[in-house]
Length: 239
Image 1 (cartoon, helix red, strand yellow):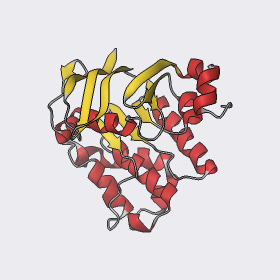
Image 2: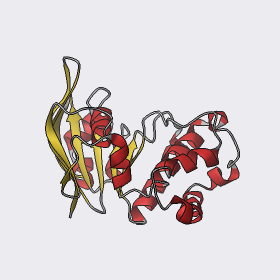
Image 3: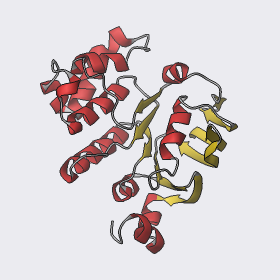
Image 4: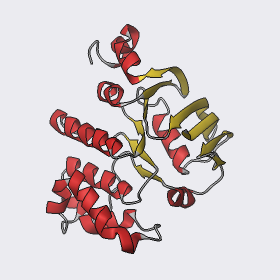
């Protein structure tokens, strides 16, 4: 079953066309990745799916329903949550308060709070250790874990991960992607935007390559990772 369908999406920043005629699908239960260089349109696509950018043309379907004009907070209520590029934690709030904000729109948050926290702490034990610490005093890797944990507190049907490895050391990148695979194994559908093409293709069931606002290639993560032209352009010749 297709959970997310993006059809002919066009988005502008003023007169500048950021993405044009972008189409892709995210089957329920899958990991789908968008990869490409800086400025390719990956984050714009993600922001548009989450409702943070207006659509000039095209449409977005979630679970068969047209959400193209739906405001962002309503999409969260449907089960679309995002861990944004740059993490976007609330620096003056504690780890626990940040996580609680992730469940803010959920009507059942009081009844499920303990189970939701247990899931997040199981995936990110470091957050449990730092539960009373202000988010702004944490390392970049810890803040990335917090951003992902906060998104999971919304109990998403579709988890949007925008550049989860940005600015992290190689050891932490491997850890973050191991957690992403565990989140998927627990049953969460994931749309992943990522510059680390090697890790993204290793993790994804399906991948789309964006260049200057357009999708130029698509295929399974495994097939694209094995393609010599993709390896040369995005993987430095190696996976």
